Image 1 (tube, rainbow, N blue to C red):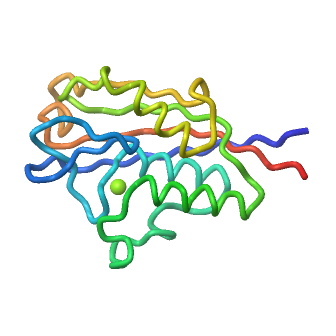
Image 2: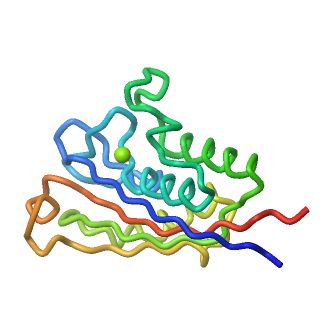
Length: 162
Ligand code: MG
């Protein structure tokens, strides 16, 4: 019988000028981007925390500390590939995920397919096993004022049966 485990992840990054805006490894066309030590892909960071949580492997900070120069400018997709390896070493593989991206602007609907495809490829999953939803901040709080972008992810992993 397959053993399924669930994990949750959340992340927030500041939106600033002079930075790229990457979501799930997909470049978003916007005058501002997400600030951070790595490439600041808020969706991938939340996904990594969800995957690590499901496997009982602590959190993103314990595997990729932001004080470590090794991870400066690190690509989210690279960190995600490393995370999938960590899971595999513990006998787990991703099986499904769902996400909410909180952003007031730009409109993200046109990127939905590319984001799902990008994450499905990275996780070795079918397109239908990767879902993403978009919410504005309704003009309120740091998301609503376009100061920040936040992501929440739930992921399932399965124990690999030999
Ligand atoms: Mg982050």
